[in-house]
Structures are given as C-alpha cells and as structure tokens.
Image (tube, rainbow, N blue to C red):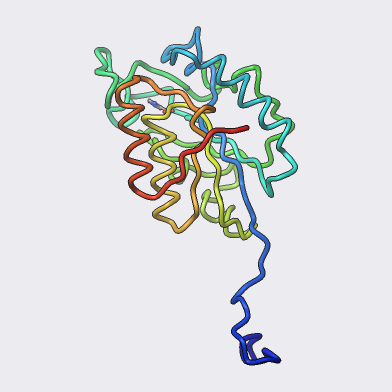
Length: 210
Ligand code: VGL
C-alpha cells in the first residue's frame, strides 16, 4: 500500500521525501583549453583555480564530483573536428589528444577530489559529457542513475561549447540543471552570452557560486 493511502488524516503526503542527490560536473578543465594550450580560452587558468577552490570547499555537498575530458584520437581529424584552418566555431586546431600534456587536467585541479572521470571524443567531435563514458564503459547517464542523482551543477570550459551542450543534454535527460556561470569561461564572449541566454530560456538555472 502506498504512503498516500496510509495517510492518517486523509491528507496527501508528499509523493517522496527522497533526499536531493546533487552532483558537480567539471567540464574539460584541461591544459589545451587554458593559457598555454593549443585551444587556449582567455581566462582559463583563473577559472581553473576558482573551480579548484570551489571543489575543495564544497565537496561535501555533492554526492559525486565528476570530471569530463576531451580525449581525441591521435590519428585522423576526429570526424572533421580538427582542421588545418579551423573556424573556431565547428572546426578546431588539434587539441586534447589522448595521453598528451594538453589533454591532462589543468594543474590547479586536484584529481583526488574527482570521483568519476568521463572521456569523450575518441575519433569524433563530442561536446557533451553525456556523449562520453568512464574507463569502464559506463555512460554519464548510467553513473548518475546509479547514484540516484537528480540535480546537476555544471562548471568548466567552454561556456559556449561543452558546458552548453552538457547542460542542454542534462536537461533533456530529465535532470535539474544549474550552471555556475562565474566558474565557466567561453571561447568567445558573444557566443558565451548567447549560450547563457539559450540555456536560461531552456530552463537551466544560471547562478553564481558564493
Ligand atoms: C570544446 C571547442 C572544441 C570545449 C571542445 O571543451 O568546450 N570547445 N572542443
């Protein structure tokens, strides 16, 4: 018999008193996306340090801290993602090639605080972390479902590409999504503003970390 039917005074009890399970998704805070890297985003290093501080301080409020990495193949153009003359909108200079320093986390990131790592982009463009998988082959959605995660907070690089794609996919998959906008940085200011507007219009909460 359900708890609703058992209600002693005939009132409808809340359907669920489940604890909110929140996860922090740290998107692509890698050397190639921060100053000195092959696809450096201006402000990447400062953002990486701010993210690292946030993870250290707020680790306890998350069921899981998950980090994604672009992890492209050293051979071929990764499905047209790499180009000799990139437009920096849908084609890019080679970046985050598997096993290289450029694909490593920015040194500010404390890998001991990361519970799950997601790899994406092996031979293909993959902006969203939902397109990636763990080393054991589990999808991000499967990892979140196993931990009964309902809420996702997103930080990382780049606001206008991988953060945007991950946030929209998360919403589509049924999660409550928040983007901590001061802990994200984008390739271009204009497309980052457009991405923030698009995410907000879609129903993603855009907030600032305190
Ligand atoms: C990204 C451009 C190309 C990102 C990845 O991580 O946002 N941006 N590949």
